[in-house]
Length: 326
Image (cartoon, rainbow, N blue to C red; front, side, top):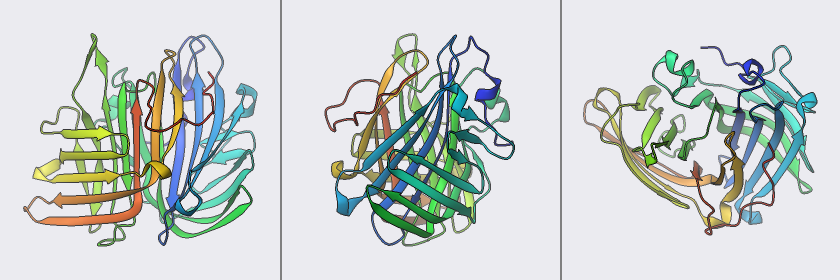
C-alpha cells in the first residue's frame, strides 16, 4: 500500500479528516516533539488545513503547544510531498515548517517499513471502519533542529515514529499508544490504535490494531474480531492486555503525568468535539509473551506516547485555548 494523501480524492459534498504526524523523543531526557499536519473538510465546504506543534520538556513544565491555520489555498500535495501547508511540509525523508514562534527542520533516518494497522487492504477502501490508521514508519530516527519559545533543541538519533490516519469520523473514544527507547531492547517498538464506536446508541467493545517489534521481529496485535482484549483507560493512566497473532500476548501499563500532558479540542465532520489528552513522554511497561510462551519485559521512563480521545469535556486537565476550526 502506497502512502499518499486522501483529501485530494474527497468530493465537495463529503466530510472527512486526515492527519500526517510525527513524534521524536530524546534518548537521554524526558523531552519530545510532536508535529501534526491536518486537513479538515466539512460536508459541502472546501478543506481547511492546520499545523500543530507541541514540545514536551519535563524541566520546563507544561508542554508548549502551537498551531497555524490555513485555508484551502495554502494546502497542497506537490510531487514527492505527502502534504504541504503554507511553509510547512512533510514527506518520508524530511519534515520542515513553522507554527507561531516554533520552527523545525528534521530529517528521517533508519525508518522501518510501514505498518498498516487494519489487517486487510480492502478495509482501507470500504466505508467501515470510518477511521483508517497506518504508520509510514512505526519506528525511525530523527536528525535536525527545532526552536520554540526562544530555546533551541538539537536532534541526534532521536527515536520516534511517523503516522497517518484519515476517515469520515473519529472513533467515539480512542487510544493511541506508541513506544520506543526501551532499556532492555533499544530497537524495540510498539504502535497501537484502539477505538470504540457508537452503533445504534451503544458503544462497541474496544478494538485494537497494531504491532510490536521485539528482537527485530514484528508481531501483529489485536484485530477487528479478536477476542480477549482488556482495556482500562483514563486520563493519565492506561492498562491493557491484548492478544496477538500465533498465541502472542502483551500486557501494557502506560503512565502520563498531568504536568507533562497536553489537551486539545478535536472536531469531527459531524460537528462533535472531543477532548484529547496527549503525553509524548509517558512511562511505559510491557510484558510480551511470544509464541513459545517466553516472556520478555520492556520498560521506558519517558519513551512512550499515551493519547486518549474522549467524547465529552474533561476536568482532569485544561485544554489549550486553540480552537479546531472547520
